[in-house]
Image 1: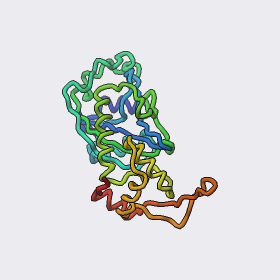
Image 2: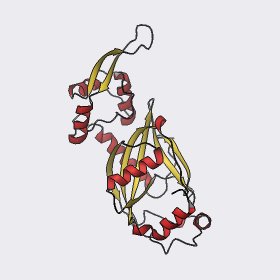
Image 3: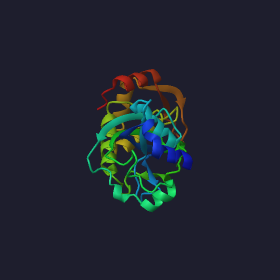
Image 4: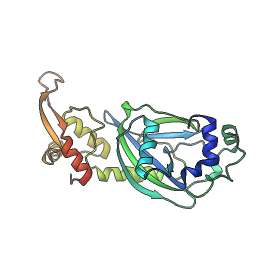
Length: 258
């Protein structure tokens, strides 16, 4: 939503084309050069930071709603995207944290207590992973800021979003052993050191540099190219690429990496 008219129509009539009381929240992880970050937004009527998200259109699947919300914020689509948990505690949204004056100035509506938005809401959590250097972050009429934060230096989040981040990070790290993740975060051709660094950063722990790439090779996920990268005197490591057919099969059926 980019205009006041769109926002007002959403508040007054959104229940006609969105499913009430069920939302999507997205933990969007960003990787680049051995850094892991998380995308957060700050709404205009709320002081703190939270995960990006939104409501589900009556005409779309859950995953389509998540894909739409991720693309709206990052400008990137076709990311690795996984549902990780549903959150529905009765006190998960604290309505008293909304600034009523800012709400009035933003919407022209005295209160949202009589709208379809004011009620207990269940949220379905999804996580996505992308190369944060390739994103173009976007705000809208309700959003003051949208920014990447280092995963080890996150601010306290609003609602139950601290719990969401913990669950998303845990799920992502477990699933790294069962799904290939990396095709959107590495160049088309990369060295074994680069993919090793990617997995170490995402997992937050050290991996055996001699054994880890061999597991990916044994699964057929990597192909050794007849090319090398010159990175200094006597240092020309071989380049590799993902086998896209095997990669697609592994995304569909899963693998066992550990």
